[in-house]
Length: 406
Image (cartoon, rainbow, N blue to C red):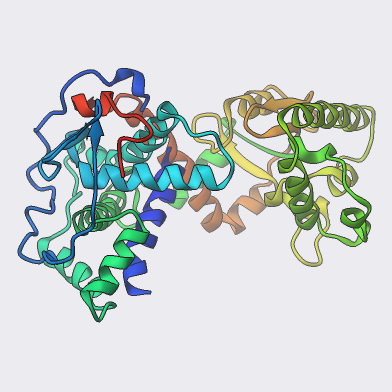
């Protein structure tokens, strides 16, 4: 979830900076009006809003247009009210993106995407608030950032065009900009290197990674597209291509397939993974197999390195960025032992080898390892918090269909 949050922050930052350049089944109750009083809304900032810039919006419920959406709260996430304008931004943003990549869009899918994003974004503020930590941005800082964005446009028409093209209103832009700024404050107070409550200092990370609670491993990763059939043109110069380039070609070929062909390719990729695994277990050189079959870009060697020079992954059972299936398989191994093929549903096939840890490597690379450790540590804590976050929904939310919002 934390990685999701960071992606959302980037998305919101993109929307804001462009000025200068969940589950729906739980939707039954009315949205709470008890949002934190420090949250800056469009109404709070009406004195700086571009009141003459109006973007047409519409909400239709049960065949009738809702005439007053200005005060409508679509849902409340962790005590933060989400206005119709802000909700509309996420709704139309995801609808457009899903259609663009050929995904069949349903109301339930959209609700899931939007609520997941809102939990990720507002959850970080709620988490800081519940730990009595800073999570708000001053009105002065907000106004400075907001005006800086507005200054990119010489006319109201230019600004209105930008808003409309990006599914925004002035109110939604203010809300997303404010939540982006406040989320940064919250993240810093929770996990920041300078005084974050849950930040783990390098000495503590070093101790954790050298303990019996941590392991080191490498892997051979074959994605579902690994056995995708390629045309002669696509295979041209294959041996001279980098693994990254090969992966791009395979993924592109896989995405062109229909569902039945994709399933058949997955089966062939699994058969290939099983063959590679058998070679590794029967004495094959794991690093040579990595060179031929591994598509995990994090394990590609740097310039003038070979696969045997790759340090691999260091992590503890509690704080790891890897899926449960991967983690459990890795910890079940003895040093220099190779796993069976591990299938991760949204990913592909993994063959893991556990390696002995190197204290000298940990010592000389503690800065990077501290960043990695804290990222996983923060994600674990944040995911745990978000699993219990309270979300309430308006009656209108429960009645949404694909044509409700425009």
